[in-house]
Image 1 (cartoon, protein in one colour):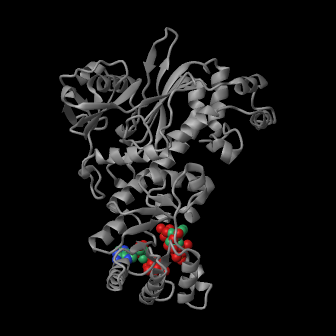
Image 2 (cartoon, rainbow, N blue to C red):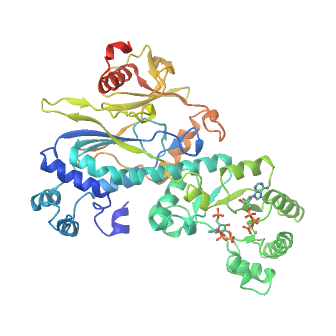
Image 3 (cartoon, helix red, strand yellow):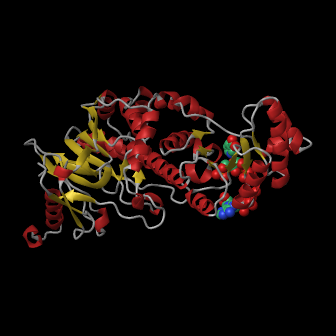
Length: 496
Ligand SMILES: Nc1ncnc2c1ncn2[C@@H]1O[C@H](COP(=O)(O)OP(=O)(O)OP(=O)(O)O)[C@@H](O)[C@H]1O
Ligand SMILES: O=P(O)(O)OC[C@H]1O[C@H](OP(=O)(O)OP(=O)(O)O)[C@H](O)[C@@H]1O
Ligand SMILES: O=C(O)c1cccnc1
């Protein structure tokens, strides 16, 4: 994939918050630029009041990091920046350092299509402080949006219960790049196709579509419009039946369907885009069945989301295919995921890493210190719990306890010996060299499907989903508690 090259014709290093650059300068000036650090990217709460989140965006991150470089035009732009006194903002020596900077971090991340949970790292970056810091904004930009949309798509596809969902979002998406990334994430989340032809070309997503009301309106009558479309595309007729009167539209579609059949062609179906979709789809089904078109599909569209689809399923609407645009690609009911990127350890002169904690009045906002990995335990193919643990921690296979990071009274005993396990963070870069090969979009989509299937349906329901256990391994919990108490100048011994 060559997203940066194809879309931006060059460097993306300035696609960052200004404060990353001022911090970078200050790190350099204070001799800390090359100090090794560890940062984690994670979110604190599932979006859409759901019980799961589906990770997406890693291919973009890989592409971004591989191309991470300040080009000469970027440096020229920074070189011209001035402070309020009119003096140059950045020392030319620093700009020379930036222009020679080569990406050299270790990155570990969850693969795209992995089901993920709050507080567990989705990406771990280890490397020179200045590089880790500069990556904060782009990594969050990429992962926050794509993970959000993949999750929304997964929810919509779960509601559609195996019916194809066609993504129609381009016209309402957040700009050009937002639309492309949303089409890709929607496909990962289970959509069957996109209407966005460029997403088809760039990512290999199947493209599909019907026709618009304007097609019908450009003719004297609806019949003429259907006939002309059938003439142009006899093998792919899905007639939009609601431009004037839906029932008459279905009758006209049937007439043209019969004419097509005489030519040895089969009408694929109809689309309904307004009115009561349960009522009209059931009426249309009756009419199509009676006329000898039991295989003709009924596509529905019009501001659909997982809740309306669930309601229509509950009403036994005869809809086989769902066209979903606006509410999917804009993540209508929750426009941002809210993932964050926090320093969790820093290497000091003697070569050891010191775990770092950020204290907050809200326990939800206290990060997990140290360098960690995440293990997922499975029993008979079903995910039972995720454990966040210190990288160098030995795991007792006979039994251990994981502790909820927000509420330490919530604990779960785990017997690793009886479970299968999966290490969720995979090596992506080592010292700046890519060691991970993307499995490609089809395989990613398949992984998403398998991952979702490995979770009990109680975690996937739309209303009040059952909480999946994710906890800190005991030693990590104690380390965190100790650091919190120390930071508050309380004696850690009091906790025990
Ligand atoms: N039977 C149904 N149960 C629940 N929701 C429905 C049902 N039928 C349609 N809807 C949804 O209700 C909303 C109807 O919106 P609205 O009233 O704006 O559409 P409309 O008037 O039928 O069509 P138009 O887009 O032409 O304005 C849409 O989000 C649609 O998906
Ligand atoms: O509703 P969405 O989920 O975004 O799906 C895409 C919509 O885009 C098209 O119409 P458009 O919205 O352009 O016009 P209309 O609402 O007047 O039909 C299409 O007919 C769908 O209704
Ligand atoms: O192909 C369609 O039916 C389509 C495409 C984009 C938006 N609405 C519908």
